[in-house]
Image (cartoon, rainbow over all chains, first blue to last red; front, side):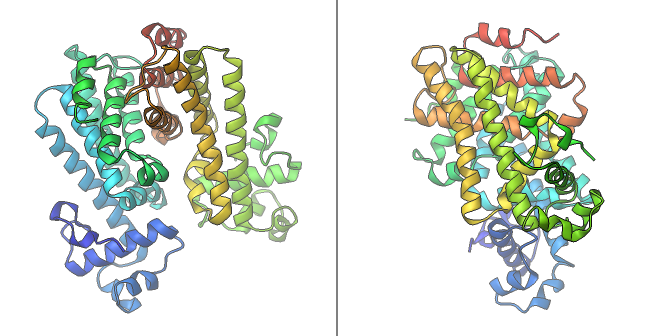
Length: 224
Length: 224
């Protein structure tokens, strides 16, 4: 079982949860990832935490509510950490784009299970819960769009597909999707390691943005 | 309900199915797309075809087997149509890459429901069925990889992330994933229409490949 509940506060799920809620959340992510949400019972989640089945309901009103809280908090955590990575990158769009792509790929690679659950199983949510998650997903894509538009306006980028807003929006969707939908095989067996994977994805994002070649080489400087 | 069972033979599912099997398959794709596989009952699938529940079992041994047949045949159909698009594009890697990316985006946009079911719900399959689908998915990615490597060897491409096999493999995974995971919002509301969307995605694929600028302009020639 993963020890997600022992992670630093920014990575702990659910955000602001008690230690026992974090332990249940970590067990749920493991099980949802391995056997799907519909194939997972409350009994399995509580058994993984050495609790009786009824104990879940002291912490979450239902399995569906637990899924919603997890998916929501994974998205919030990604959105906040990505904003922080962009803010730390300074004012240059190419540096901001590199930082954002690196963060997203690192997160996908380091948190394989939660990333898969968030990006696959958010489609199981319905109604206002589903709309809430879609709004956070749009916000994450919009962070890329704003960087791309700023870079195009400054002449630092020449976006593949065009420097207009539709071009920037499509490019940001493509960059987001390529960074979060990395195949399980690649994440587990990529022969050159995750830092190399991260830098190559950052280089692809810069290519889509049409950053000057120099920026791509900066992004790849850490690579052998 | 979609009328997938009225499609031309290459698009008909399951491949080689009887008219009634095609009708059940079309109803199942609509329902799986709208409410998920676990949320869909055999009774709902047969009711959508004006059949009694038991009628499904004359055609498919179970709901899970129907899902497997559908996911398998969608993947086979995409793989074969993509191979044909590449073969029709002539010998130039940039033309082949453009044709392959255009085909994949067009397929995602024109067959939104089957694309979502294939790319989301294949993870519900287990054991040898899951392995069979993963092998077809690898074959689709490998088609991109071979084009990228051929282009790099000929000096037509300078692949983002590097001209080695790991660089080509990652780029092909990124191109595949960005072309099949286009957000539902984009597919339904993209203001400039699907042909424009397709051309912009082809331009992004060429950028990742590092094709000469001229190729990208050829790919975008149809765009206003």
